Image: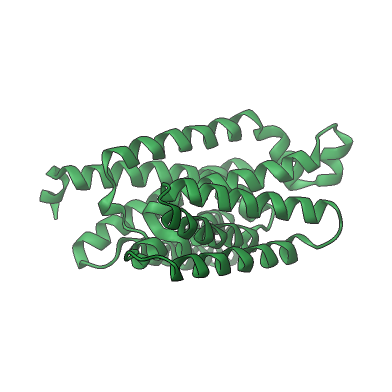
Length: 268
């Protein structure tokens, strides 16, 4: 398996995996802290409609995914802030609508669409242009996370306390949803629409099982994400299985191991 490291396609896959792992690990910290697992899943699945519409009109799939994911995220934020729907109900409604639009769009396509790659991703097919786009989008997400980290953390731990401290809680909630949409697009090529939500939840869940304070929680989430993506990539090559599924299976094993380790530590 060592010989694979000499191939350019594998080097690009490793670079893409590292980028996606850092971004998803950092955001997973907030997803788990704010209990946004279902919302993250909804935003990622909603991107399907945008990808299908983009294919129908000949636009870049990444652009379609970004527009659809942002639309679902912003519509969810608006509906929940107005008090018309709870956040999970709103994302459920807008997600199924976006997916239905995607199914209709695909029915009008005259050319074949790589649905397997769309649904489950393939990190081994990342090309130099994909790598540049991944890097640019990831830098934007990480820059926003760094710039607003303190108010985001305060609002995630205690919204009432954050509001009393002068934090715009509504704006922070909206920012998290926008970052979710951007991260979905970043990870789309690696694990696909169906599995990207797992990459937004598993790293944080692993770290939450082991860490007692937020610095360890955050660093553990990024570390778990790196182990998931890079370990899954190596597993994919070694066993000749789909890379997206290998990454998520690796993450699931990490989660089960962290739960077991956490219980052993509590019993000790």
